[in-house]
Length: 260
Image 1 (tube, rainbow, N blue to C red):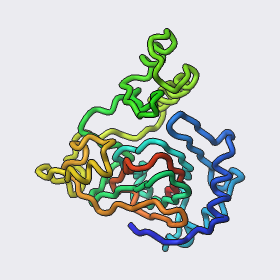
Image 2: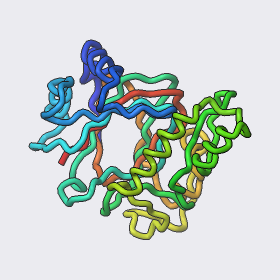
Image 3: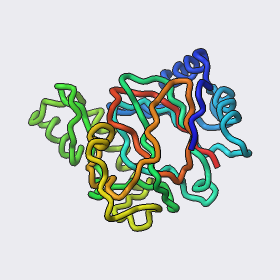
């Protein structure tokens, strides 16, 4: 992996942020995450700016698989974006920070996965679990948003800043994921490259950067680098490399481009 410094100009960052802010049929808006998925060589968006980024950071010819603009208040879990084909698994992810409230990082591990795109955990990831902000602006774990939706509808729960309609959207999205191609789940790390079952993760690093994860989830793994998000910089890493967000930011906007 590598970090390319000062690649984007202020006007290019502004152009990309303005595109992201326009809500259209490529936008997926949820209480915690707003994403946008322009299609390469199909949609009208600042593709030339992104192409310039790719041409500057990649040495070999490439095919773009997916582009995701992501505005997130939460911290994504441990995962790999390896795709599904051999060509995708051997490809690259290009991360473009655009805007940060607070301090944001991506945590990269010295561990790799040769399977398809996967989320990693030592506990079961439930299909309808969610992190939602309560009325104190604190993130609260909800085991099943379907039950919360019913309780809010019945007037039994009033401490969340979310409507029944917003919960219906989240539930529908999760139901659609169950019948479409989704990331796998890995609870047994035996096939994770460089995994050491006897290694305990550093508690101070966990508390500072990764307190949104159970520490058991990163036991046995080693950190390669913790990269701070700096708008204008570009981060390039292997699609097979385990990584996750840090737990430090309030909100961040960036682009991830997956190529093979």
